[in-house]
Amino acid sequence: MTFKEENYLIGVDLGGTKISAGLLKGSKIINQNQRFLPGTEATSKEMTQLLIDVVASVFDKNVKGIGIGVPGLLDRNNGVVYEMLNIPAWGNNIPVGSILENCFNVPAYVDNDANCFALGEFRFGNLGSNIKNFVGLTIGTGMGVGIVNNGYLLHDAHCGSGEFGSIPYLDGIMEDYCSGKFFKSHYGMTGEILAEKASSGNQYAINAFREFGKHLGIAVKTILFTLDPSVIIIGGSVAKSHLFFENTMWEHINNFPYKQTINDLILKFNTDGRSPILGAASLYYDRNEIKNYKSE
Image 1 (cartoon, rainbow, N blue to C red):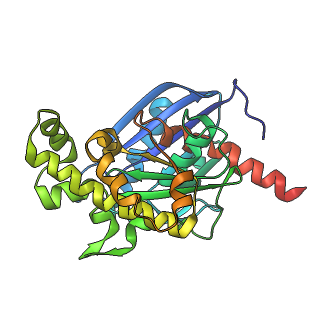
Image 2 (image 1 turned 30 degrees about the vertical axis):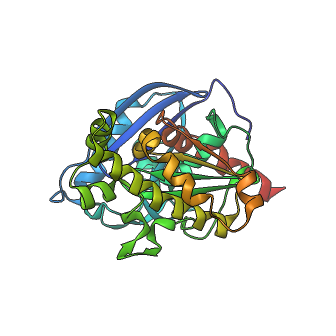
């Protein structure tokens, strides 16, 4: 399906702490709103209503479709989310697609949030625009990977490709060391607070980011061994602090055994935060292009 500047779409990014929704006209976000998630005592019904309210706050009568990125495994064909990782209050087997379609009477498309980040970079990003093969790595509340293959999201069985954050690592999983969880569990502070301290020269905070960079470098090498991308785009809230961990990360990437891989590797950081919403909205194009391709 051809991109059109006059198309109105809605993109929704469901994160670990908040829901963000944006109304797009073409490639520009013209209205945006967000709501913070309630505590663990919230019910699945309350969480669903919160999603509906956020979408309604930016809805326009000209909207042609709604896309949403969720942190979990799902059935993308039917819009059913099997489970929301790190958000147990949502429950399991939630028909998010049909819920939104019934409320707003437009098509709704659901995919993994890291996939939406990668798709947003491919469709609209300054870093990934028209790069047909690359990996999008998100490091925020959790860690996720989206894979763009030949200009399309990798359409796997359950949106589970690239779940590198769940790989066993040290005394836990990789996400424990390569996301915001690392700073809270090992240093007792959020990454944002540690970044402020590091900016002021606090050695404790600087060391925290250096250690984080070591773990992230190991994660990048795991991605290189598995997917062999020439481009990796890193986004998410922690990516904004890349100046504090980038050098240490590269120290560990550079000992990768295949030197040509490192020579060809382009690694970029996205810090503007728009890609998840843009990518979720552009599921409208991705799904319809796949549908048209299959029918030819």
